[in-house]
Every structure is written in structure tokens, then in C-alpha cells.
Length: 315
Image (cartoon, rainbow, N blue to C red; front, side, top):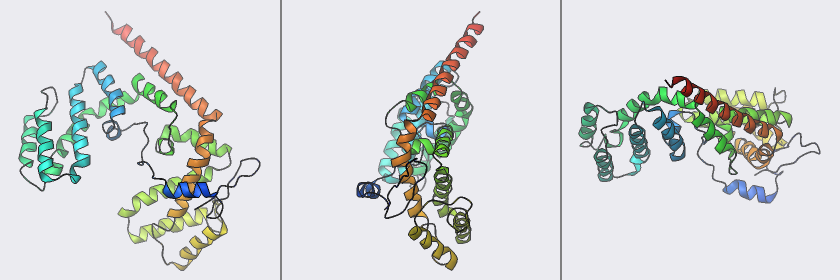
């Protein structure tokens, strides 16, 4: 697959199929990438889809007393059902939804009309998988303002601190979270390797968007990335070996075989280089230490501010 090669100053890498040791080649071939999201959750979809994040949010809800915790729990249950509904038989779908409705609490903020619509949808095999979609959308809309308050709360700050001080941080946690990504990019700048993340962010977005793109759009995006990272006069030349570069150049210049998979090998080379080589360095760097310190300071400041507000509100 590829091999890392570092100079004495650790300032650059040369990437390519013949440049990585065998143990990294084998590991990269067998490595199963985690889901493409950060575990520092900042959107309502992320928060209500993961039990750990949900627990922090639930604590915040209980202290606010504006929306019932049962509403959050019901949304989580509905979301879990929706994620797995396509893999269930019609009979299992009906059983799961009926169990949800039996456990429905009156404090869950759903109208009688919505509940009746769910029960009606269960009778149709075509809509049973999506019978909770309108309720999920309604509850998300209801919770959205509270989510924004939560993001600014001491609970969320503490969640971030708890997370970034644990040992098993993944590359996905860093690159799919804007707050986490900024110090990582700064670190790569210091290592004279920022081109890796610049290329990877574009390539990753391209790979995930390409199924919804026309062939012409795919071609234009590939050519654009080629000119920026691989051509002889590239603005940000990516440090890959000549064999890989010439293969891409040949495909682009001939106009043949320009597809979403053309850059997939290079994307994986860069991904693995960041994961295997740069992520451990980043997590042990002064840049990361400052990032954690700033989060901890913010968490303390948020707690103090919340305490002051509560003191002022007391008669």
C-alpha cells in the first residue's frame, strides 16, 4: 500500500505504494474505518443517536426542566428504530413500534394526531419503516433550540473535556469536528504537512458526495484536485511517489477512466499516514495540550457563570 519516510527534521513525508514497511501495509489493508463522524457531538442528529452523548444531554434537560427527559428518551428510541428498520421484517417492525407506543409516556410532547398517524402507518407494509419519521422530525424541531443552549452549557464543555482526555481518540474524532480539527491543522502546519489535511478534506467530501453527482461533475472535481495537488505546476503538490502521480496524470490527461475511484487509493494513503503517523504525534504535542487546557478552562468558566446566574435568580 504505502510506506512512511521521514527526514531528519520530521517535516515532510514521501507517500507511495513502495514506501511503507510491511507491518503498516498489512494493517492498512485490513483496517476497518470507523463511521465517518466525530464522537464530540455537536448536532441534534449526533446527540440523539449515541447513548453516551445522550446521557450528558439528558442531565442538561433535567436541570432545565423545560422539556421532559421522557421526550428525549422517546426520540432516542425512535431514532434507534429508524436506523435498523430496513433490516427488520414487517412483523418485527410492527412489534418494535407497538412496543414503543406501549412504553409511551404522557410527558412525551407528541400530539394525539401524530400518535394516530403512527398506528395507521403500521397497517401499511410500505410505510412501516418510515412511520416514525414525522414524529422524529417534530421532536428534533422541538429540541433544536435546547440543543443550541446545550452546546454552550457546562455539561457539554465537561463532555468535551472528558472525551479529549481519554486514551482512545480516533482520527475521525478529530477530522469530523471543527473545534478539534483546527488545532490538528495547526499541528500539521508546524510539521510542514498541512497539504495532507487540505487534500484529504476535499477528497473525503468528494468520495462521500460522488454518488449524488453527475459524471460531468465528478470529472470536473477530479481535474480540479489534479491541478491543485498532482500536476507539474500544482499549487499544493502532494508528496506522493512518481508512480502514483503518473497513473493519475495519465488518466486525467487521456480523459479516460476519470471516476470517483481514481483518487481513492491516494485518499487512503493520506488517511492512513495521518492516522498512523501524525495523530499520535498530535496527541502528545504542545498544541494538543493547549487545546485540552483551553477546554478545561472554558468548562470551569461556564460552571462559574452558571452558578452566578443561579445566585442572581434566587430571591
